[in-house]
Image 1: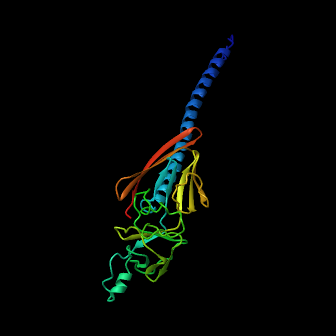
Image 2 (image 1 turned 180 degrees about the vertical axis):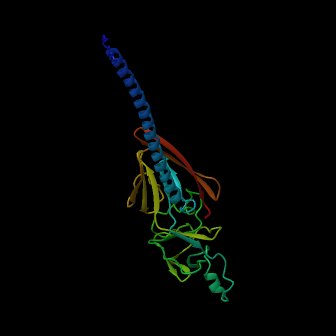
Image 3 (image 1 turned 180 degrees about the horizontal axis):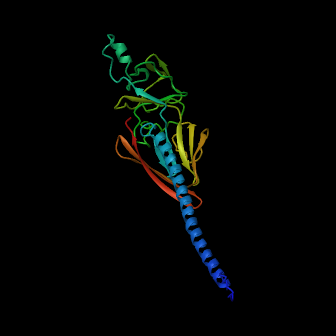
Length: 289
């Protein structure tokens, strides 16, 4: 029997096929890398923007909280990059009318805050134990929005530590020392306030505070004396605390809406690695003195 030899065929890639396959794999790899890379860059950019928004929003919240604790009509802006106010340390209501429960008319009259003469004491309408006075306390009654009018705004002529003329100011100078005696506040020596408060409120203050923007950051300055001229650089004797850095734009604006309300507008832009976000916040300020 004749045996016919079997021919075995071998299959494989030719050099041309191999080159084409490698080229196609390279193109696909580049496309995949580009797509994934763009998605990663987009994620990083989004995360950076979110971080910038959170950073700016936190700074705006801190400023809003500070400024809502300002003495009515004490917020003022200079040059768009300097914002000042007088923080309230404590407040209360003074007796406006004689106490009808007292049989002695003289004692009943003493309890009121007298705006017609030097007064040395007035009753505080407060239940329970009176809180301690803040250090270097000054008393404010009847502060108004007339920033430039001497005597009816706490900034006008308030830099002097000497006694002002009778009935010509709404803030006690540093020469008048308030103290607590029972449910009364005493003033030594006596002082005559220029204006009363429609709501019968008084405020205890001791220093002023500012937010200053230098083009790259916003810094809070506090603990410096109340003065007539608004500081536009670090006030002498102040303590400084950085609020936010990376600032490329900041703008403060304040408008008096009426006798009882004002509107503070803050524009803030922060930048990081070429990415910028801008936030604008309008804050309603109650000025019921």
